[in-house]
Length: 141
Image 1 (spheres, rainbow, N blue to C red):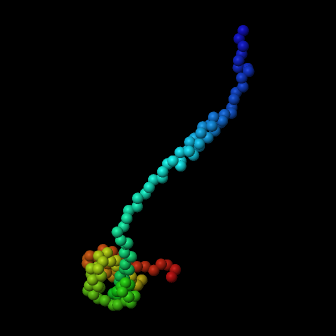
Image 2: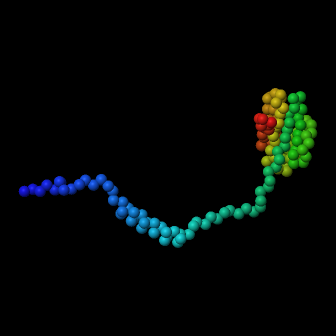
């Protein structure tokens, strides 16, 4: 006589999460006990001998519609003065003796030919001016 054991058993379709909760609580207690014992890392910042110099105002070279060059040195005064190409190079070289990284920006009237702006830029580059930029007015003004 064989007794059928399958008739009395029911299929179980639920997960028992009690052991998982026990493990989680044990881990929580371990972390709560050990967290105050851990020393946070120390960061050693580099020291600087002196403060950095404030950035210099760039020299502005304006190209007008008639081809005239005007120079404005904002570190000295805010007035523009009309210069020739040789005077422009001499003024920039004198300024670069004090600071080799002196920036020069080129501002041109919107009616000036693009070729005139490129000639000024080429002249500055051929005279070892390293930092050259173009000055533009934002739209809406």
